[in-house]
Structures are given as C-alpha cells and as structure tokens.
Amino acid sequence: MEFERKSEGDIELVLLKGDMDSHTSPKARDFFAGILKEEKKKLVVDLADVKYISSAGLATLIEVFQKMHRYGGLLKLCGMNETTKGIFEIAKLDSIFAIYETRDEAVSSFSS
Amino acid sequence: MEVNIGQNQVLLQIKSDDKYLRLVRTMVEEVSSLAGFAPHDIADIVLAVDEACANIIKHAYNGDSTKDIFIKLSLLSNGIEVVLKDYGRKVPPEKMKGRDLNEVRPGGLGIYFMKKIMDSVQYIIHDDADGTELIMIKHVKSGSNKAWKH
Image 1 (tube, rainbow over the protein chains, first blue to last red):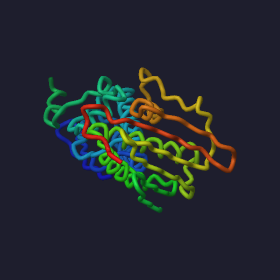
Image 2: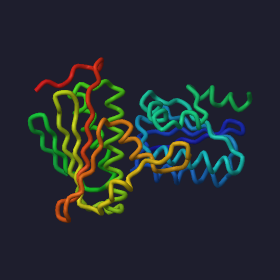
Image 3: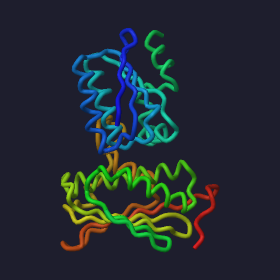
C-alpha cells in the first residue's frame, strides 16, 4: 500500500494506493497516526486507487474518523469505485462518512 | 503454499500469514466467475472469504503466521461452496457474532459481512485433532450470468 500526501491551503489531501486489507492496514494506521498527531482539522482521503477494502481497512478509516471527531476535525472520503462503495453500503457506513464522487467535490465541500 | 485444481474444485493451502490473502482473493474471484456470479456478487464473495481467512489468522491462530489454512472452493450446479479448515483455537459459534451496526467502532465487521453476503454460514467444530471447518455457500440468483454446468 502506498500513500501520497499534500496540502491545499488548510486541507490535507491523502491518496491511498493498493488494497486495504488486514495485511496492509497496520501500515495505513501508522501513516494516519502522523496526521492525527498534528491534529489536522480538514482531511480528504481519496480512495480512487484503492481496488479493495476489507473490514480491516474500514476499521482504520473509522478510527481516523472518530479520533478526528474528538479534536473537532473532519474526514471526507472520495473517489470510491463501485466495489468499495458496495462494501461501505453493506456495512451501512455510507451514512456515517461524508462521501463525495470526486476529490474536487470533497475539497470544495469544506468551504460550503 | 499449495494449489490443487480438480474437476469443479480448487484446493488451496496457505500459511496463516495475511500476506497471502491477496492471492486467496484472486483465486476466489476466478472460481466465482466460473460459477456464473455477476460482478457485484463476485466482489461480495471475495470479501466474505477474505474476512473468514483474516478471522482464522487473528482469532484461531492468534496471529501466528506459521500455521496452516486449507481452502476448498467447489463449483455447485447453481453456485459455490467454500470450506475453510484450521487447527487453531476453537471458538464456540455462538461467540462469533457480528456487531450491531448502530454501534460505530473499528472491528467486528468480518462475521457480519460473511453472514450478510453468503446464503449459508456454518461452523463445524471437530474433536481436537480434526480442527474447525467453516462452510459457506452462495447460490447464483436468477438474472445473474448463467450458472456453472457440470
């Protein structure tokens, strides 16, 4: 699993690449720990290059969502393929997370 | 790791290391496709089997990556049967409950996915030497691609 991180103003953008399963999720958790430590308030995670996500990957994102919520931060997700979207729907997480089709939509939602 | 392909059946033996799960997913995807499932059902079956393997590694083998997991994928006349066998800690089936989805927290979704996706999920706990078997079946729904013909 690979991670790309950049800032756009006060918004942190993260692009995840690869499968998010029980093998790769510990690495993802370590990566997000850095962002959480900085207490970034606005975070967009782009899942366009995530081909597969299991409950371990979902657990990582839930953890980020909850920790950010505790310090007043907001996590937004975007770019999900149909498979990933389906998994969020089965777990009924589509109503918990703020999910956008594109990265631009997710970024601009912070100013609306 | 060992793969045996027979008539209408694929046998896979892996070590209990989650680095092999991607390989298992690829195999399940191919066999589900042969069984005639539609793409969204194939993705779901892949998820159910991946979760089952991850549960064995985490709960039955406590993360020990040196143990064995046996996976049998069988083409049925109208679907697929997946049998996973392990020789780890035996967890009583009544303790294998998915969590309440209203409770948003990390973890506990694996069993929920398996039960939600597959038509049948059954644990058979054998005597000490014979390990635990998890048998999952899913049938092709009418309207999907044509089912496998023997």
